[in-house]
Image (tube, rainbow, N blue to C red):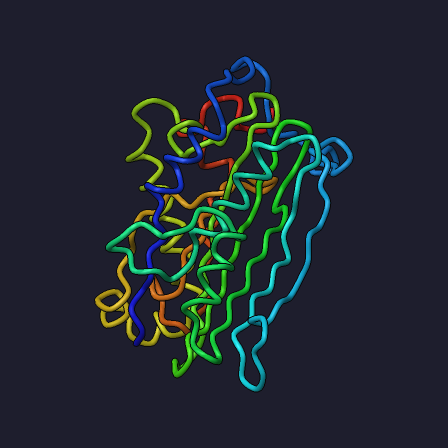
Amino acid sequence: MQPVRKLPTLALFSVVVALAGCASGPSDTISLIPQQVSEETSKDGVFTQPIKWERTKPGCKGDCPTIQVDSLVFPGNPKLTQLVDHALAVMTGVSEDRVQPYTTIEEFEEYFWQTAAPRDQTVFSAKTRYRNKHLTVLELNSWQYFTGAAHGIAATQFLNWDNDAQRLLALDDVLQPGAQERFIAALRAAHAAWLEKNPDAQNDPQGYNRLWPFQPSDNYALTDAGVVVKYNSYEIAPYSHGQPELTIPYSQLGSILRPQYLPQ
């Protein structure tokens, strides 16, 4: 089993604070989650443009390291554009014992060409997971293959962006004060429901729970169906299970989320 590469979230959010500023959000009486799914419309959200490219190490012939980008930029919204670029860059497999020597994809590319082995690959992608006129929820993905490894390693990071306040919403921003333990309990219940549909867990519940115990996570996304929490490979399941998603319906979040993040 390959070791899990944890995302450097402290470094990410320290830069996020600087990028996002200190703007205040809308009133608690305004719901940011439309009650009807049909009210979700890309036309009401932030304007996006795709950015796609693939490059091979300059001057290399034969087996060469490559980088692919399938991401988004946000014209007129430099804060969000810079945030996505930075977040993707730090979702890479540099040792977690030290800070990466780069903060953008451009800087990562320069570092990668200097250090990559012949068959190393890095893929960055970003897509909108949910959007309306108040919120832009992004799913960022990185995939890396290191020469000689049995398989690549994927990582996912959700970003929940408040369009009105021009700031990132951390989990504590959307939870009611003191609701952290209730959120973990709801997440644990979603995990239990996921285990009931997991054949490996059902075949040997005790063994599975010993190897892959539940663990809380703040990698959350606000969606039309509820709060989605996504785990990276090896966090709560073996590699063959990919990146599990747990969904907590809004019907179970009434006393957990702040009112503006509940459908009304």
